[in-house]
Amino acid sequence: MGQGPVELLLTDEGMHPDTIKGDGIYAKFFTKFVMNANETRYTLKCDVAGTDTSMVNQGAGSLRSTSSHTPPCCGSSAVSEGSVLAPSGMFSRSESGGIVIVGSTKGLGNNIYPPGKINDLSLGSLNFDEGTFEVSFTSTGDDLDDGIVASNQLFFSANQTLISGDMIDEAEAELVDINFLAGNYTFDPLPASEVVSLPLSMNMFNVSEQYYFRIKATDQGGKFSLSNVARLFITEVSNSAMRMGLNLGIVMMALIAIWIH
Image 1: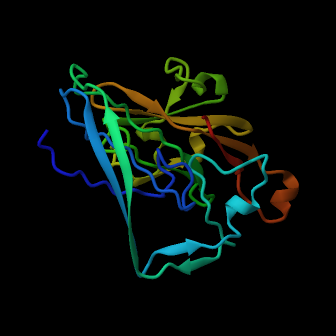
Image 2: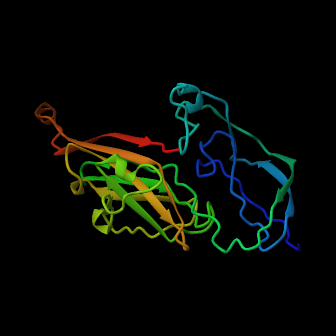
């Protein structure tokens, strides 16, 4: 068909289609198929190289320490504070991946793929002096893990049902807009694989109420994907805690990520 080789850089950062960061399994979507063509055959080859900075995880990480009832998944990391990392040294290896046959791509249009799923939406980095907490996630792409999406919308609700499943009830769930942001930040999308960190004001949320957060990433053609759900609970500080020197009006607890498969 006249198409030259296409080179992809596989990553192990926990970004879709990869699921666990640092577990040694590298992945990336391939979307550069020949369009408007009949059945096409593709050959695959994988090249691996070690550098002065590449490391090997020799164990004692989250994969071994996590119980079988709560296996790591979807945006989590296999590398923890107790992981033993050893230099891989310089090396180079190559392996054939065989042949892949793809059916006809005629008449498929120009917007085949939705944005990839954001797996690592999380809440943290509490700053009680400024009354803020941080929302962070890894940017997805306009076509799976490639490009820049048209928009990232962060929804939240005290009713988990409104943002669970395959859809977000946008009429009932609340949308985080610029009024929630603490500082000169925007929701402008970043290129795929770049990390987004946004500080939100605690004052925008009720005390003693649990909230559920989820991102809707939409591409230029209107296709979308939904992230995992992150949970937030804010409670008042007790009088005994106040006497102990915690002169803060609120404290944030139970910042837990819930993975939606």
